[in-house]
Length: 181
Image (cartoon, rainbow, N blue to C red; front, side, top):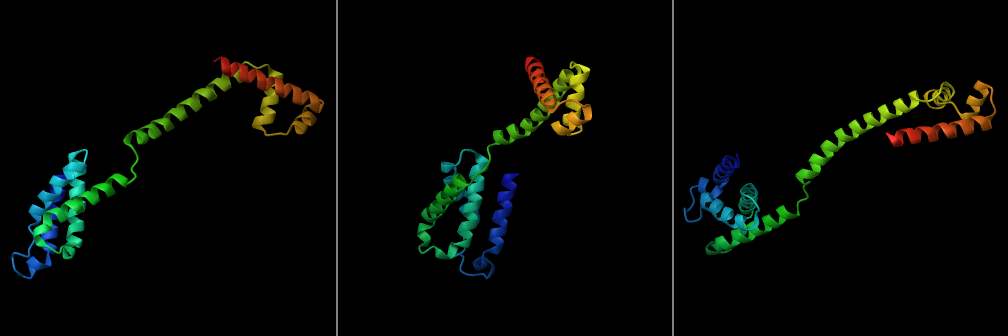
């Protein structure tokens, strides 16, 4: 796919070369196929893979096209292209891209978190089922109905201190039950 994209880019650049379109002196016209070959050869010096080299070469060709009027000496075209390719390779290296493994870990991490939360919820429900009726009622009032400790004491008709102590003990039981699972 990259090779066909490279060829399309070369054809587009040839079409845009105003010196060739106007029928100017052929010695002024650029052979963009040759330019691509030169850029690709230079790009392989800097790239880790063929697709990366092709990307660098394409970017260098676009930059060469845009800056073609700045070339002072036609005989120095090869070294001029080499400089452009080097600069494009350095730009490519400085671009921040996430590592593929980071994306995989994030994706799998979400699933793992959901599974872990489900397991923890199941452990909590099992621990709640093992509580006696009085302790389950305290937990239900505090966390399901979101009542304050004062409201629980008023509803059950017991002292506030008793509610605080019982809730503290129930939480400790639940921590032990969940921690041992």
